[in-house]
Image 1 (cartoon, rainbow, N blue to C red):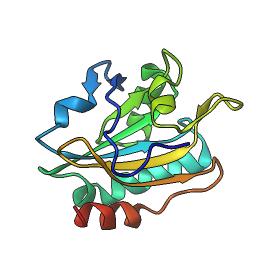
Image 2: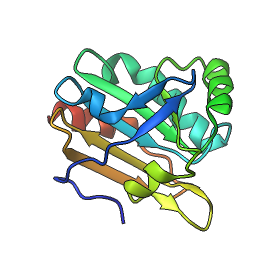
Image 3: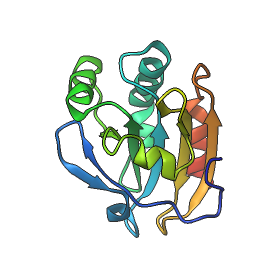
Image 4: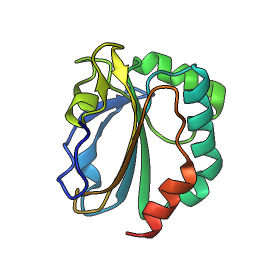
Length: 152
């Protein structure tokens, strides 16, 4: 079960595509966060979703909001993926310990060994204010993220 709206977002520290550590709590008091879990880089639906986020990035990410995308790929894979797709936002690796952040948010599929499509909008106080969880084959609508951000 995914964590519920109104609960404190579990903290994590993950490497981005450049090998830099990103800690969710570093944004507390500074920025709202759109936290997007996706299964794996270089797959059809995932590529479409991350590219759609990139297209909407001027509206999704600003001085008040940070987008963080998390998959179970290694940071090395994420670097190549970000370069090939021209992605300008952090791709975080939940590779090791495998799926720890995905599990903390209740979106890790133990059978498949990867995250399902879970998105969480987290406010500056670190509280989950909106979420959606889709199965592996079901893409999310980025416009829903924009509506959730506007409602903060």
